[in-house]
Image (cartoon, rainbow, N blue to C red; front, side):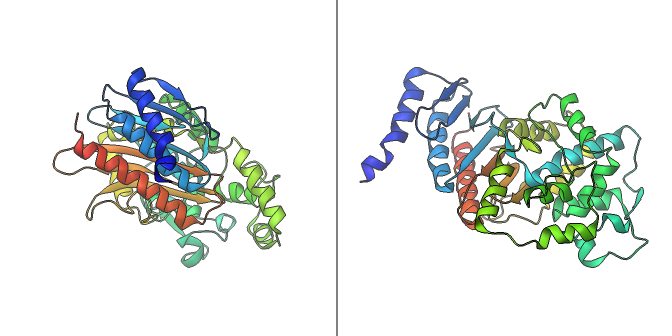
Length: 351
């Protein structure tokens, strides 16, 4: 039984080694149609790729992974060029656009932004929970902290509007050469669309009262399944694992933001308070991770940069899960196990 279970993965590893396809794409012919790529002349990466593919099966959905060692450029991807719903990981590109504006002098970190009552939706937000009285003003810096530390949706939507809207964020991604990321909707529109209100959009805003109606509308198992299927196939607000990995590398390397803005963004991501069971879930105690999580429907994600011990460097880890019907904690466990495999490989194989 055990031999039968693991044989396909050993065949994958053997084909990678014998054919010498390092740095090339190897589309698999199994039912899952997985696409693995290995970057770097490191024979052991084939073993890492096989282990990532094996662990991904436990999500019982579609999994995308990109892992790159920042100091050596070695890495692997699983379905790296396939689009996945970003959910709240799209807050990283929003932050990049905001900080690009700060770097250009178009916006100040301590500029105060008025939170209008029309911005206050019932959603995952400290603003809607605690600070929803008229007359509220919050600095750009504090909005960034709320958006990235606790994934505050109202802070996100206010920042997206301040950034010039979703198209401005996507345009910034194209400007820095990251073509695989698109941002299309504020979170209130994204959630409304997922819940079966397709007419809601950035240009067709729903007011907070009508949004409550959408949130509370009764749903059957059949309607929920249909909503999930529609959302899973929607190309909006998606990223490929490879594109998100590229963006994280550019942030870390100070390629697209000033030193000050890059350091601020990474520092806030180190202090992310969500998704403790994901990238960080089974890493050694004390391991630092600068990351951002996302969850909606059948999607559960975590993207970030893992610090390795004893001078081993840092590794970008992007793990996207979509179309998964297992409970969220089980998806998180898959992300955690993949992150541990990536961490351990680059700790013990320094290149």
